[in-house]
Length: 459
Image 1 (cartoon, one colour):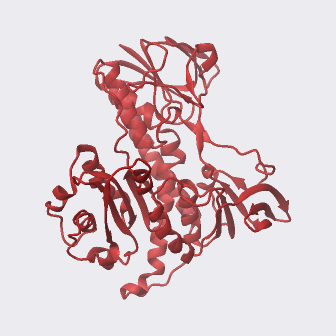
Image 2 (tube, rainbow, N blue to C red):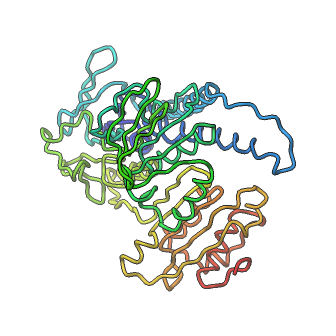
Image 3 (tube, rainbow, N blue to C red):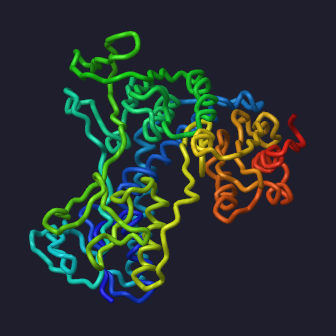
């Protein structure tokens, strides 16, 4: 079987590898770099910066641990160099995997001529035609642009440019208080910039459990972040060596100046090389419409990743890739979105899976809530990171409906609760499972106990 995959992000390269493992003859087409946005300009490089900020914060807090240290200043050039090294290591790893699985990688801009043929313009200007029996579309997403005057001014950047900054801006305004915006706010505020976050909606992290956001806000403000919600950006102007932002909020119109502006207002699907009307490819708004098996309306054509209407997360894209390939090979497996974890890499971390308490109420479900604060967790106290809580929402039978974490290593702790939600493990079963001591995971254990009022170390 000949399979063509258009796009080599987490969706595309995973699909190519899995299809090759199953014996298909695979061609993977990518116009930029293997790994796509996530690996090259998103998830991975951002986390390099997050870790540098975390280490810098730790240096500033060493006195709390009985240590003496003379701190210097952040070296952004060294951070960028390390970021590039990590990215190149991982990209190189993908290249080796492609070679080992005998995936034919074409570097060029692919255009879908018809469902069985893709034309690729290579870097040297020549073209190569690729025929297939099945086509997988995985063309990813691009930053959403806003119709606001001044977004093209020097000093206004997206997350892609921010990852390569060699000097720390004295002041930075971030437009957008979602995951991307808050992660960059945390990074640059920790490293020493004066950061202001401007969010159009009434709260940051829309879609996250309201209680978690409510607990997070005082922590962010105490760290020095200036957060303006229910505030609209009207225009950006050049003002001497600075940028002037005209904002409209609850108190009327105001002007805010900053050295740099980062636009982090989310992403939209990219269908580069896919002429939907000419092909007759059915859409669902801006997204490619697929059935539960990730099939489009065109026979033998599948769509996965950010171009379908599912959470724009790398791990979701990878899961969709594996599901699509299984279906190509006849398994008939529906994509399951019932347990999709997500994390926000700030300090303290936020992670969640399943229903929020607000969604449980809206659906009229009968539920119980268990909570356990990290202030009562021994390991969190030894780490000096005792802010936050583990919150579990469970049905009357103890089956988990949702879980929401604010605190140290929340992105790791959410895995246990994701597994429990996916396979119907109850809070009682979690509470009857021995967890290591001292560990942060004990907060999950105690939260499970707390659902039915049986927490041992908190009342």
